[in-house]
Image (cartoon, rainbow, N blue to C red; front, top):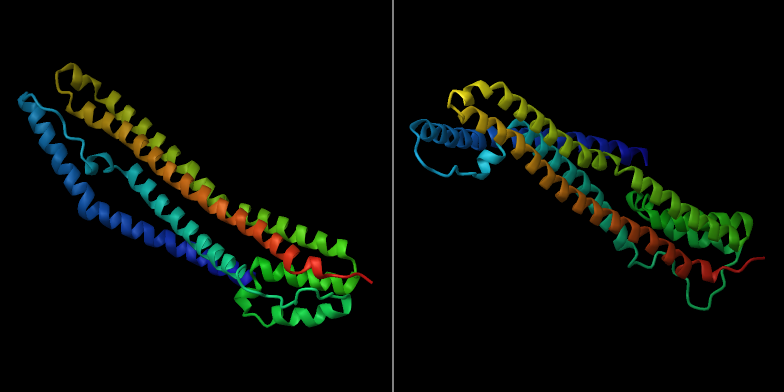
Length: 265
């Protein structure tokens, strides 16, 4: 468990680093040069007094530093959820395997628990760390110790509840990112409005180009942040749904494949 947590931390760290490098490279190489060229062209047309409708291209909408930070956080959150989703899918595949070979009609006594535990202990180390093998193994060990079916039932329930709480707590970073992205967007809004107010004297003199650019920063950053937060919350909801199904299916598997075969002293 500790090894998995450390490897997951390293993965998240490298995912953040790669997201920063990739997004910043795209912004420096493509987004900002294209957006700056379009903004200069619009300002020149405004200066000539020509009658035109400003073009709100994607590059102009996402050009600012707040949007760049939002995209970095988006990719980081998707990487974290992808890692956890891949593990959840691997655990779900175990539900299709017969981890305990208990023939129908067989009665499992406390002294038989050790024999049935061997098939679980023979699994690879990474699979032994999954929810289903851990739950089955701890249940057999409890049955061998206590000989109580109720104790086994409580063990199955407690193992699944603890796993559910752990999975929920491990998504705290994704929830923080989903909260942070709109906050960054609002920071861009405040910055843009502040810049626009700082150039109000130019608008009085007839030059409104600086004000319009600053207001564009204000509203574009909030727009992009809200859209990205919707994407993250949708993916987070799907991940949580699959994890909840995993826990419920694991509990149902243990009841069907183990608990109903147990016979107390």
